[in-house]
Length: 109
Image 1: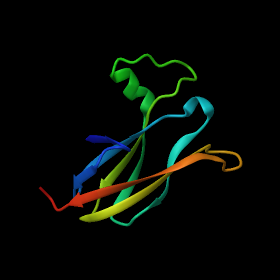
Image 2 (image 1 turned 90 degrees about the vertical axis):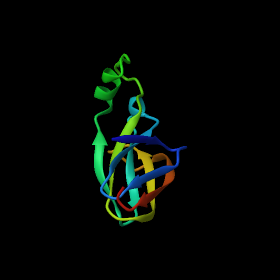
Image 3 (image 1 turned 135 degrees about the vertical axis):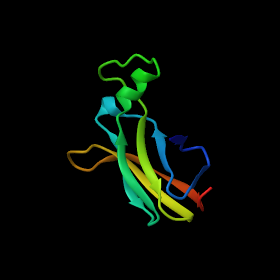
Image 4 (image 1 turned 180 degrees about the horizontal axis):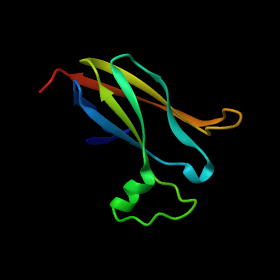
């Protein structure tokens, strides 16, 4: 599965699953979530980031920030937009900010 960051051009093919790696704010109680997604992309959920860090040989410390990974699937060709928000999953809905990314989906390989 391909993994992209916010500063990369995201180009995938129909039916391809991919991850978006975002800077983590876990120690502060915040997490990234999808605020809005264009039809044609499916949000599949969060990847378990602490396990990813262990797999990559990084030390996981209690309270440490680690990258968050969100999984998506491209369902149809076209240009799509995903708006993300970094907020606490509980409480008053305060957010640390939003990010928008664009995804280009090409017909099958």
